[in-house]
Length: 467
Image (cartoon, rainbow, N blue to C red; front, side, top):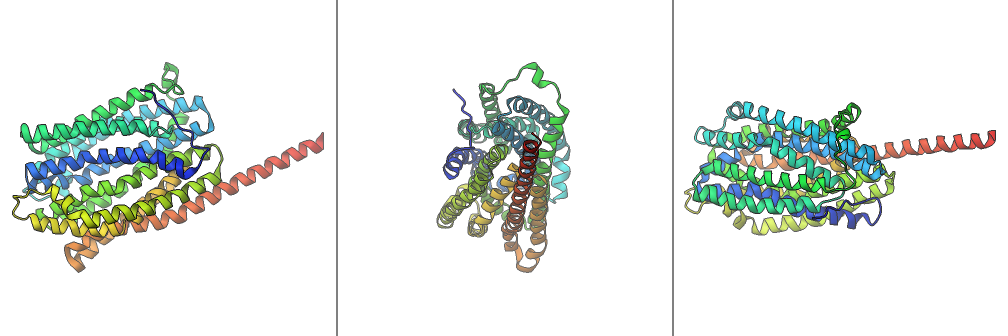
C-alpha cells in the first residue's frame, strides 16, 4: 500500500481541513469502539456491576493515556513545521528522536501504571463490590501502555505529514479485530472483564504494527543509522512542545479523578449509568478530536511556510464545521439516546430503567452543550500548532478547576444530577480562555514577523545606499 503525505500550505482551507479530518473522524470512531464494545459486551454478557467496574477505571486510565496523547501530539507539531518548511534533514532527525523518546516514555508509563493501579482505586473509594474487577481491567490496560504509545507516535507522524488515511485503515481493521475478540473472549471463553481488556490490547497492537510498516514506506523519511544518534537540541525542543501538552492532559485527568471520587459516593447504579453515557461521549467527541488533529497539522505546516492569513481562514473554517456537526450530533443523541444507551445495560438487570434514566439525563445535558467542547479542541489545537504549549496547559488547569469546583459544590446543592454539569462547565471555562489566548498569540507572532521584515527591508536599503 502506498502512503501519501499532504501539503496543506496551498488550496482551500475548509476543503483541506474537512477532507483531512474526515478519515480521522471515522478512525476515531473505530478507536472509540474499543471501549464502547468492551462496555456493551461486559454490560450485556457479565452484568451491571461489571459495567460499573469498567467505568470506575476510566479517569485513572485516561490520565496516563492522555499524557501519551499529549506528548505525541506535541512531537507532531515540530514534525509538521519542518515538513511545511521543506527542511528534510531536520524532519528526519525529529521523527527518529520522537520515536526514541516515546519508547522511553512508554516503558515509564507501563511501570508507573502497574504501581499506582490499586492505590488509586482505593484512594477514589471505588465500591467494594467492584474494586477487584476494576483492578483486573486496569492492570491489563496499564500493562499494554507501551503498545498504546507506539501506535500513537507512529500515527502522529503520519498525520503530521498530512496522511489521515493510513491511521483510519489501521483503526477500522483494529476495531473489527477488537469486536471479534471481545465476543470470543467474553461470551465464548467466559474470561469476563479481563477478556475485554485483553481484546483491546491485541487490537491496539495490530494498529501499532500497521502504522509502523506504513511510516517505513514514506520516501521523504529515512531511518539510516546516522539519524538515530541522539540530537539533544531536537530532544530538548520536542520535550518543550510535548511535555507541556502531556502535563496539560494530566491536569485534566486529575480533575476527572476528583469527579470519579465524588461519583463513587453515589453507588454502583449511578456509576453504571454514568459509564454508559461516557462511552457514547467518546463518539460525541471524536469529530472534535479529528478537527483538532487537522488544525494541528494545518497550522503547523502553514506556520512553517509563514502563511498567517491561511491560519486565520483555517480556524474560521473549523468553527463553521463544528457548529454544523454539533447541531447534527446533538440532535441525534437527544432523539435516539435512550435506545443507544440500552445497548450497554442487560435487559435482565433489575435496575435497568434506573440506570437508563441516569444515563439519558447526562447525555441530554452534554448534547445541548457540545459546541463548547468543539471550540475547546479547535482553539487548543491551533495554539499547539503555533508551537505554544504553555497556554494550552493553562487551559487544562482552567478545565480542571471548573470540573473539580462543580463536582464538589453542585452535587451538594442539587444532588447527583449536579455531577452531569461538570463536563460542560469544564469545556466552557477552557474554551473561553483558549479563544482569547489564540487571538493574542497570533497577533504577537504576526507583529514579530512584521518587525523582522521591516528590519530586513531597512538593512537592504542601507546596503543599497552604501553601494
